[in-house]
Length: 280
Length: 280
Image 1: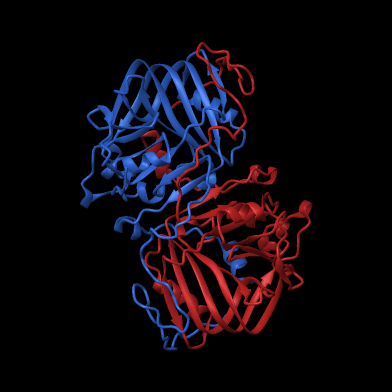
Image 2: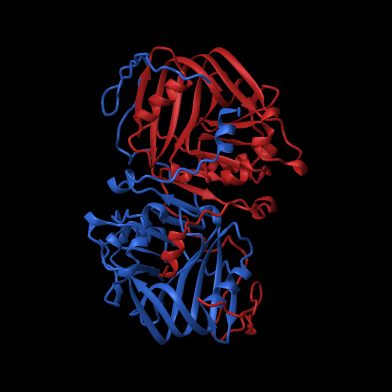
């Protein structure tokens, strides 16, 4: 196709929030609360935010902890300005901060990235491991048991941990937000020993890489709800692994200026472009 | 981390569909219909399938047209084995086949990839174009009017078309499914002239590339519902453009063997891996 010179003057009438000017009546409003359909989505993972933007500095929280609870009773996330880590378990939201403390999060705390679901006790496979396993052994066993690699699973692992190493970031200065990969030396690591607790997380398929984090991703919460964080390493025994297959994922898109102005990598393949315009 | 030799014998008890063997009672079942929570998702785009798998040959349909209607009254998609194109408008699903005909799709027809939403008359921006525009001019004008590039918009364009070129593929032999890019010479192109109709489609942000098709994507349906297909090119005037912002997208994952065995490109960046394991 030859280059089109864009010289025509358009008679564009902007009718947002004004009375329609066309011959047929046009309803126009920016009130989103009317005539909104609720979709009959079941057994899905709800995700607020997009991982690629989050790990590259879009740390500003927007969805409150109170709102997040509407979408699930199980899951993980990050607090506003990555002030620690969030773990959602049995309907409560816990925040682990860089001082190593875990406590129930304030309902007004906002998150820039969180992944939750309703953990369905009635629909899952359960496996037990009695002997001691390390991180790699546990993760390999879980990956081995997944019915399909191109699907999503909510995964819960409860039992006795000889040790669990977790991490939490200290809150970043909003105006100097660097990508997370450049903040690794600021993370605080905690090693908890000889305690009972639960790993809460997901297996996400390769096609959700960028949107979410593909593969296995867990946060930890001790039985007394006082220790937690993003799981880095572990050694445990007498573990009960519960794998719950999910039908899909809902991604709710942030509307923060930070998110809106984020430059995502473009990886639209030439193939797709060819298909769209119908020729090579 | 040094290589871990995986030599420990695991006492894995597979308890799926059997009585639990552990000390505490464990409910276990593969019946997914019990205790499934419905998420309160509103104003979202519902998508069945993943574009990367679909354009590379996962053409086997699974979700029926009857089911698809539960998730939206507006949208586009592909029929089982890409036997033409699907256009969803005012709650009806139309199939345009390679013979150039458009008719209401059979409710039992299955789709491997479809994108639908409830078109919300109360929440949108409306623009009018009176003079004649071509494809590029129209698309540039729409892109220019989008409030945010990192969001999703349902877009409807109704008016008078001097010409609309659409395409539809003939059904592929399931056993010899090649990627869509290798089937371009089998597509049938149709040029409809001097007719009134509607373009039905979406703007998808860059971060959904691979999951969906980023940028603008439209199907066409004439006012008499007898002409349609995937829009390749157009010339039109007296067009009314309605742009409806969406809050997010729900991706329902297929469970066909074709989809389950599809090898997605891995584009997990080293950054994300570093962040996950907490060290470089």
